[in-house]
Length: 102
Image (cartoon, rainbow, N blue to C red; front, side, top):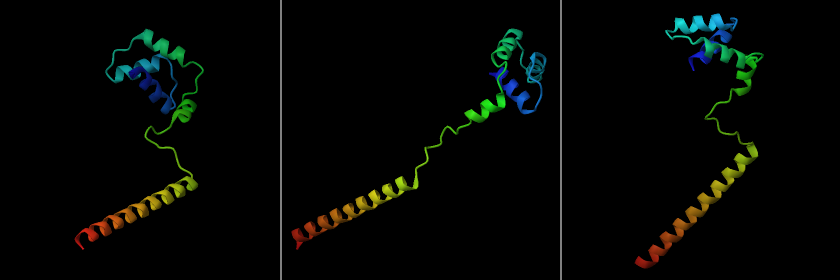
């Protein structure tokens, strides 16, 4: 994971992403770089525009799909109908109780 972070950091800073720069970043962070892993990562991302990939993949994980205003209005109408039905039921229950005691 630290190898990917090094590449992302270098890209963000506008630095050239190559074997030497990735190795320097890892050493500066206190990691022991593995030349084989660095080469494998660099060959995997060869020709990839990292900035574009990040922009395309940037989607908040917890974001819910947006509702259209029509859907929201329909839901609020349904909620109001349910509230009215609940009020009627409560009134009917109260009148039933009143007849028992009344």
